[in-house]
Length: 196
Image (cartoon, rainbow, N blue to C red; front, side, top):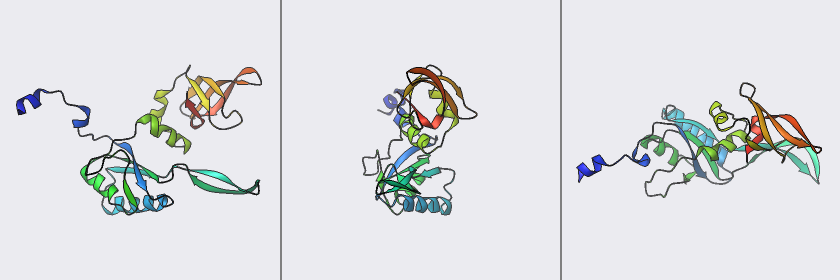
């Protein structure tokens, strides 16, 4: 029986990955930053810096409105209430540290009963990081001149266009978009576009 197992191809899920990946942790809504702080303290006190890298709460600044008027104040709004994003190498020890952090109710993508969760696909974590202004060099690999994109922010928000060029050093792209009925090249921050 063991001989047959040894001759079988190794499946992706059978491999132990020493690669850091993003996971989503459930937390009580409204307590995401407290969970983040607790987890960061545990990472330091338990010397897990080589396994758990980043812990983020997906927040964006929003203008405070009162009676339909902008007060000039800004507050942070959690775009994913009840969730905390953790970049980690999924070892038994790292998994234990995260899931036993006060305020953590579990991992998204885990069936429970000791099953480890599945990491977030790159396509799902990339928009979260981009909205927070966290652009990584490997994100540019998925984009090239000729790709159709949607502009997310700025005066042309909601417009669609085609990438003409990408400046990775400045994290900017030139998009050919329709503006006043004419095709116009517009420079847009990489964080402000998404593929369509």
